[in-house]
Length: 215
Ligand code: BG6
Ligand code: MG
Image (cartoon, rainbow, N blue to C red; front, side, top):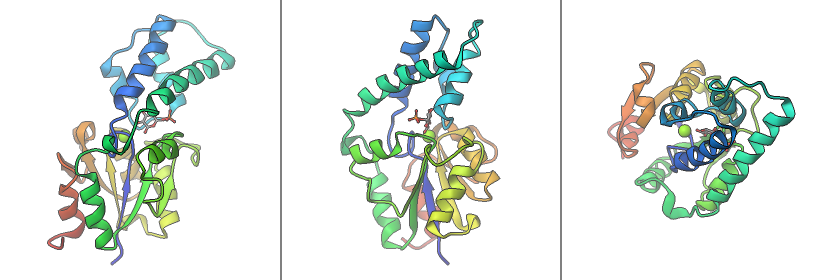
């Protein structure tokens, strides 16, 4: 039977979390809005626009569409400057080994990320041509926990959702995978989700989950 693994990008293949946090914090400080790591955790897997809406929950002001767009651009410019320092050395430990084992066993591999910067990041990591399908923030109208991004990835792989494993660090991403009828593998923050089918500490555990005894 054909199997596929759809990887989230931020927090699964590369730790861009700190860059997102730094950029949002600079924006929040500029606007005089309270922002901390707990609020930042709620932004995992969530689109840029939705992330800003969550941050603005702590503000008493109302903002025009123009101001919102300016804030989104301000944050993204800072974030994109940080991305320039990314190299393949920033790929999360054990991802390359996992990738090689899955490829050798003919497992189809895709990216399913809410980020509109997905291709920039993959290029920096020298992974851009390594996946059979990429679905990202530019393809979707509904952010995780909606399953749209994973369903697009599965379609591009020509796979049934039930044969797709999704690897996620975001609770919203686990919800999205389950809403899409996929098998959800949680790492880091996502392990708090009761919906996850598997909870892992190390990417290499995915070998056994997907391949069973075969590796
Ligand atoms: C997700 C991140 O991968 O992408 C979120 O987990 C982020 O924190 C979202 O908000 C959108 O990213 P971008 O690069 O389009 O601003
Ligand atoms: Mg993530």
